[in-house]
Length: 258
Image (cartoon, rainbow, N blue to C red):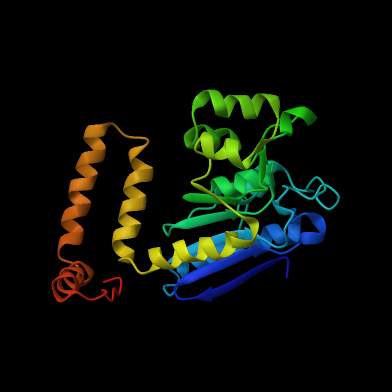
């Protein structure tokens, strides 16, 4: 399989499994990635998703140009035709938390895949870049939109317009990643974070993620009003009552998403 999916302790681990091709994405792995994302979104046993690459050299280096030929159908048919998923993974969404564990190169579509995550951590050998302008193209899976929302405008424009790479230390400095760890510790670190998150109340995590993402597009007043409504909806859930009981009884809560 070009994309593997394993589930344990409420955490789904999706691995790009083409290390011989620097985990680049060909049509088969693109389709499998879409299917894995759908499984994560609909499977109630999954509370958090971790995405990483196989091997030590690369998280993902974008499209496999040797296997990705121009499609026979028009862009309009691919995007709007019967049963169309869209042109690529750039439109993927899930209400569940996503962690990208970036091992090695995250270039082009690989960086765009990492930008889908809510939290990004990386190995100390990681490198990031959007080199598309150097070959007469642009990032086509969300890079022009998500990068400038993830880091400051000047840093985002520098990466977009020069096409140059940055290393792990620079990625941490500009806020592209939250943590840099040794390569050997990367996957375990991501899973520890994911399991801690998976122990939290799933409805509350979904609400918190949704509010934060929506709030970027709203005025402060509108965002605060949404927050007030969500707080009221969560107030009477079983999980909130369980959280209070567990705190009073000095035990770990057992959340059920109800």
